[in-house]
Length: 185
Image (tube, rainbow, N blue to C red):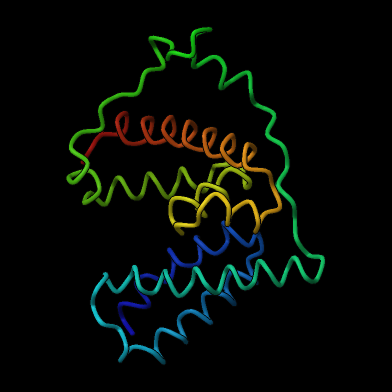
């Protein structure tokens, strides 16, 4: 129970990101926690416990998103309007502007084990526009394919790739400001 209580805030943040509704997010997390408690004996340890619980939540969220769509409560993704800001990062040739080139974050294994990095990452995910955060999370955190994302969100594949590109650029910028500028403690 203690390890479920410890992961609960991250579960709620993750669910809110997708469902855009605090009450629905709380319900999804509660259902996931109940399922984790009921199925605790079946946890085989092939993944981390937190990863296993997030997997349960992933399925609960997808079920709720489908239910929202069936009941006409679905909020479609809005078009992003900050193309100029993204265009300023690149030259006409498609190469990075000198001042916009990605910085080194250090060794990936070390960075991913650093709690400060994950605090910055979580904060950056929260400030992403809903449509960018939702598509990025479905792809990178929930592991859905582009085809599955397009089907779930009723978007075209080229739109999905554009949204993913924008999300990655914004996350990179935000993480570099919070992680590199804020110190890698």
